[in-house]
Image 1 (cartoon, rainbow, N blue to C red):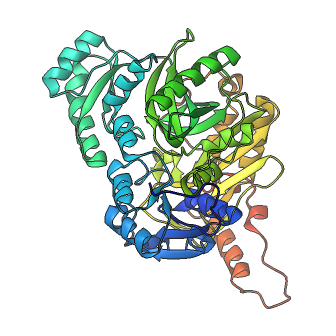
Image 2: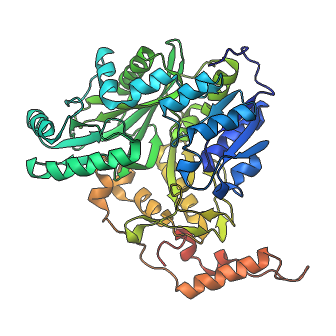
Image 3: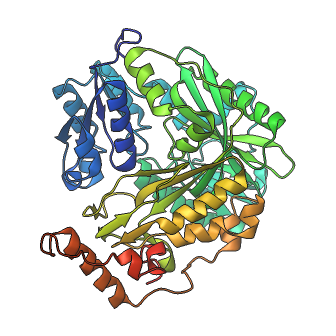
Length: 507
């Protein structure tokens, strides 16, 4: 990373190599810090809100991610041509790509994240576990990289079923399979390796002993790159579907002060050993007996980082930018949380069709407002949800003095979300939040599998023609269909009190 003058960041230039809500979040933070924010966008995203929010913008290629957001050459060239001092990768895309970080280092451009060698170390799950062991952190029983199916059979028998097959270079639940017994191993091995190769360019797999039931916890860390690391407490991430997180909260209802101290100590030990720089997350599995073991480290900002911000009063994105552009490692608060925060991921997907992605134009969008309610969204009415990218529309976050208050506020805010166009998971999220077991805090990574069927739909919804008529009335009013001064067409939110809650999920 090029040398920087400590504390002098006003007027410096930051290219944001991402899209949607995280790009908008970073660009807004640039404005508050006096940094020139540059949006790198695909052709498909030219009309998105994050592009309009930027001081400057540059198109880096067609809609498909591999021809734009995942093209290292295009992103580095854009950063060089626009004289960017650094690049913020957001999450996903190139955020944990060591080759990308190295290419920026070679070009003399800063990377808002850890060094390339750190990403290479922690990005390989087997090497990361070895590093955790050297740091004195508990790890699960498992294997090294598996040469072939025969090696997997030997290691699975040694470890003991059930086991979890995982992609060594993986993340986001891809290349991961649960194997309950020997008869299931061959099919799981071939499908996991194929998915790993398609997703990460490498088919390498390894095995871990499967802990069931378990909670998925993670600790937010921030390092100065010289071995100094702060821990900002834990997040509960057990509500998952297909190994992908759906709802997160901070703190965890299973963690007391003593366990929090042990988790934070372990996370700091791992990050310090890697001389970690910037914001990162150390993930753990927590067993019913209170024991935990290291799972992996994510060398980037997590989707769920705002829940930590809300209970600690810390702006993690501002801290990232200050460190990258000004060499300034700010002091952080202790990890004890103040109140409770919950985040739900609102996605364009159809729960009634196995949560299949739902695409199309957003005809109208209403998001919640109010005290202690935060909406981190990436779309506006008129934007198109395309098949090129993931289905995340935005993140709803609510804070409360207690967990019960935060959950009640979240359920109410979900009732206020309305989307005309693509179907959404809004009503499903509310059903989870209001589930008695969830309210009691009895969580596990198997929660959704145990409490909800594979396909889900709300109890009732309007006739499709009602939705069409409501959308037409709303669009006519928005696009000047009524004469100036004439009464506006009725809002579809008032005419469709049940359907508005689910974004069409039950239609």
